[in-house]
Amino acid sequence: MLDSPFPAGFFSRADESDDALFYSPIRMATHIDDSAIAAVSELYGELEINGRVLDLMGSWISHFATPPAELVVLGMNWTELHANPMATSVLAHDLNTTPALPFADNHFDDVVCAVSVDYLTGPIEVFAEVQRVLRPGGRFVCTFSNRCFPSKAIQGWLRATESQRCELVSQYFELGGGFEPAVIEHRTADKLGDPLYAVWARSRKLTK
Image (cartoon, rainbow, N blue to C red; front, side, top):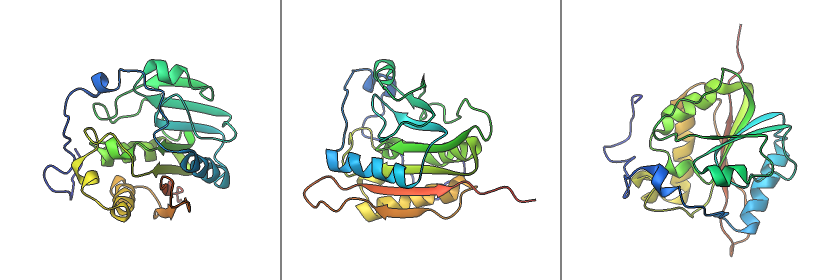
């Protein structure tokens, strides 16, 4: 693991059993309500995410209003992944077991991660890998709400306030290296619905 400023136990979970067992049941769940899903789609549209895109820790649905030209969906459940109508290819891969991504440097135009960043037990390594596979100037967009599987979310996430969670993801970008300063946004205004937060940053452009 890369050097970490986080205290012992920060990335531990109540359920430390094999993630493959936990994610083996077919759930076909959305995890956030319609207003939050719309907020994710709106953000992707505003950022004009297109081209070759990686949906990290994805499942049966990717929250694009218009599918990217190429969408690789990486997740844990084969059945859910193959049910994703927007995916041009899918890959079953456990980032908590193997943070390394099986893609070449500068392979993707953008990377997205919806409502899943709270489950990463080695986020600094994963963010470093995302930066590696992003083209210079490409974005890594993380969105999340206040819902989760609490037994699989890391302790540091569960103990944080929602604003602290935004700062935590921003810190992942900084510690992963190679990103511009992160943008933090609260994307939903409906006080009765699920909140939706976005933290995203660009991979630094190469300098001569």
